[in-house]
Image (cartoon, rainbow, N blue to C red; front, side, top):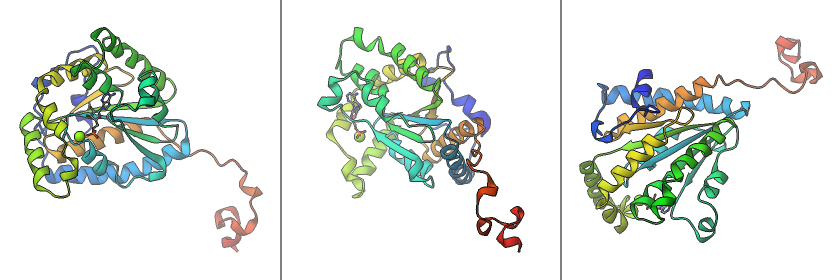
Length: 281
Ligand code: AMP
Ligand code: MG
């Protein structure tokens, strides 16, 4: 799946047109194949996360954006299961609280950025500030227009401090959203997810499309690229996201730190045979 990451990346400086990307695209992968990839990546992620945690040089920040029923929760569940909860934190960004809105819009975001050693997942993010905020005119155009550059600079600050960033836009079709809304109504365990606002937001589909187009194209940078994940097929989505995360962590060349003590300081009875300790006797 390696080359797939390149295929899905929004190339900095080049225009990606969402309308030219089929949300049901699977690049020839079959469902069973994708499930095997997800399973293998899950095991690998578990190992990589362990080294990331021990290494403490880097953090990984994963940003997930999508329209309602786009699959953010499902992606987190599928891809991240198997990770050590101690090294992983998920933050969901909702309508800002009074305190949050009295600060600059990046304040709550910066506080939630993972410390080195950790994987942080943003379920929605600072991008809402150029998405929902733009679509609903929550601030004036002259205000949201300045945010693309501010976001790029903020992300540059993070990456220059060893916080690696992967941003995923889960690209679903309007038909698939309708299907998922219907399924939610039929599934008693998913009823709680249904909100009237979702149906209203659906009326703004085209406006969101334009806002996403700008966010993806203006804010896909070399240091913090956007990936457009065709997400109508959940199994493809999971395979693609997990592969890109694994590739990114692999590229960090993570390593376990050297022990902070000399082995021969440790009492004999605790040392294995290779150190001439108890087991060798
Ligand atoms: P959900 O993710 O379904 O729990 O919904 C969270 C809601 O909070 C969505 O409708 C988002 O659009 C909204 N939201 C998140 N961030 C912001 C923001 N910065 N300004 C306004 N609304 C936001
Ligand atoms: Mg919702």
